[in-house]
Length: 189
Ligand code: SF4
Image (tube, rainbow, N blue to C red; front, top):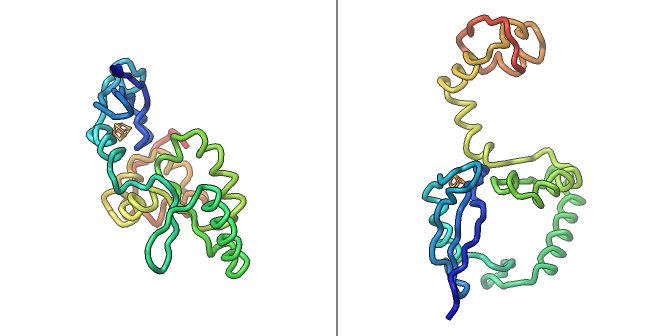
């Protein structure tokens, strides 16, 4: 009879990288629990880590590349997918310029070593100025449009007194505030 196996891993969902223990038997995930010996998270996980089992087993989860056809989706191999991506991105850039391509890098990029090593070269190779991320999608609209957030950010800035005369600070900070922050003598930037 197959025995239960314990795998000590990190949750791949966000950069907190909480330690998890995955219990498995015969290829089936039995449970996902916090790893109390993880030096960073020390037994903390959030509900998303537990839901990894549901994602893993979801019959609708994409397990192979698919290509859209007029009559639906067809599975293709990874080499086929990469060949087509390379060819079509090249065509778009040749016809409309580098900025016709946009890059989105989500959370896993910053805590996946392979992706981290490759993303810089990929961005430089594509040479587009259109870069998007979880921050640009989730947070920047709030940060740019919420007076409370922008004022609070500047109020907590201790560099205003020193750098308010510089072009850098006016470009970076002045448009975001409506209240003059307190003066300070220390600069943390
Ligand atoms: S358990 Fe939650 S907080 Fe920890 S890495 Fe996963 S998603 Fe992030």
